[in-house]
Image (cartoon, rainbow, N blue to C red; front, side, top):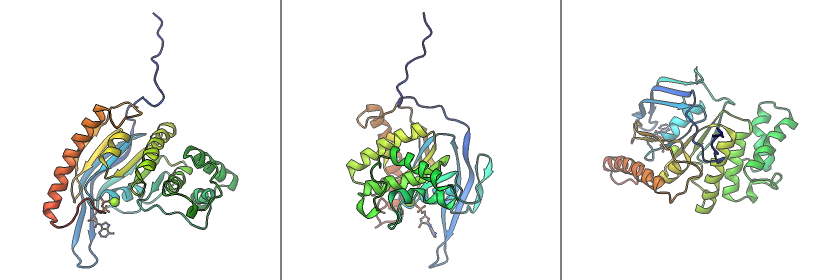
Length: 284
Ligand SMILES: Nc1ncnc2c1ncn2[C@@H]1O[C@H](COP(=O)(O)OP(=O)(O)O)[C@@H](O)[C@H]1O
Ligand SMILES: [Mg+2]
């Protein structure tokens, strides 16, 4: 018998988790409410290890501390207690090793698509030709070819979002942080973006941390789904999604996982609703 290696479809392999990339231990975050001076504990004693090239989706009720956690990883928000490290070094501020796509993505209206994408590289004093080459690569991968010279005002919401994603990826960060990246998109655009981002992730070998409030996005896209509790955020679910890609929303395995995550999440949302009666916990 010939020992032929098994055929692996390009998108089907689920990679084994790599070395620890981001390690959060005993993280606490307390804000002081400016109006009444009261303490708001956003995150309490949170432990989470994210491995190299893992795609982790973080899901949880609105206001539970997801964005806060992502901003800590980005280095924009300091931690009140605990330790947070990347590649064994404490996170002390933003750096080119991490790219972030904010919940409210911001493009510069007076800059073309190409110039929006080269911005971060220009700020790092990367030579113009090199910056443009990197930008053009991501323009191609995010399906923006032909729109290099367009201004943001002439683009659809989906295309603007692609520019924001291309900008975060152009300076080749090892870690990509996404805060509800599809929130502003219509269903159809969202479908294409989700598909594209799965492909991008597989081709680019990045570590991705994506905050979302959509169970279906989390289960369709991620290697691992982590559910945060209502504030203060603790981890109440953390499971690997061992389903081959590309994933089909109608695959019974996908549906089962979505049901499982939805149960955990709805119990938590109910708890929060009872606590904050009169407020819609899923509203933004
Ligand atoms: N700069 C801040 N000052 C005071 N409170 C804040 C600040 N940022 C976030 N919070 C509070 O921390 C909690 C978590 O917020 P956030 O991380 O934005 O939630 P999520 O992204 O899960 O919806 C909320 O109660 C929010 O009001
Ligand atoms: Mg948020």
